Length: 361
Ligand code: PMP
Image (cartoon, rainbow, N blue to C red; front, side):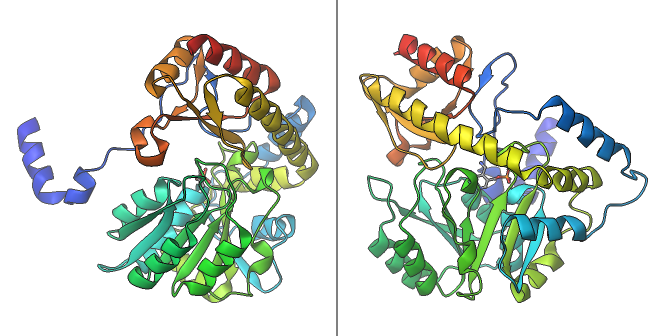
């Protein structure tokens, strides 16, 4: 039976899909979870109570508003989306990447991004039958402007993704470099601002100045990873096309109601982001003081580091056996060989991580 299924898989499933590994999420049970850029804080009890009251009134027997009109209006105000620009929502920004690529994919269409970067750009390019071109960053993780502009000229990508700040390196590319990429690109440029809350810099105000620019955000890093809500802002004609590819009712009623509620507590989300930014600096200083550890400055809610004289796999395991889960990037190879990435947690989680790291080294 299994052999027969394997034979059919060989015939039916595209070779590039067979060659992939499914996105792996390790089991974090019982561990301090610093692997996935989540916000470590929940809401105070009174806010949680208010929220559950809101949820009680959701009509679960009805389909959600397919266009999430009220939520989009609130997001437009909260995110300072320029007048005349539109928004579409996705089940996380992952779904928005998929929607954009489904709309433009074709046998010769290219997706381009500097590498290393967020892995889903390449994965979703593969899912949608597109070619992915990665342009290596410089050793300090800045954009290699010349190489990027040359690759844009050569490949004429349908879409360029720029994570701003970049994951997993944590840095912001220079504003001028990004502008040059937008100007030189014949296709779309998606500025993925997933970590905006910790960076303070944005291209949102450039929407409409460039007709090929889109800005993507997510609520995942601001304490709402469980909701799965991504936001894509840009010129109405582009978004009208993407909206055709979006599945009806992709944002459930509970997500719409919860996100609307969260937006009435923006000060709370901002306070948490401020605390995380402060703790990021403490964590960076502490990491940089550990002999044999090289840490890169970050504008996001995580820090990339390398333990110079130790094998990353051993450091990762040493941390896990001491109860701390981070992300091991060693197998990504290239510039990430030997690298690990830690998400900024609460001060006590960060301390526990630092102690475990010193013991593991
Ligand atoms: N963009 C970047 C740069 C990310 O790092 C991530 C999450 N790791 C995402 C997008 C996806 O976020 P979500 O689907 O949770 O909105």
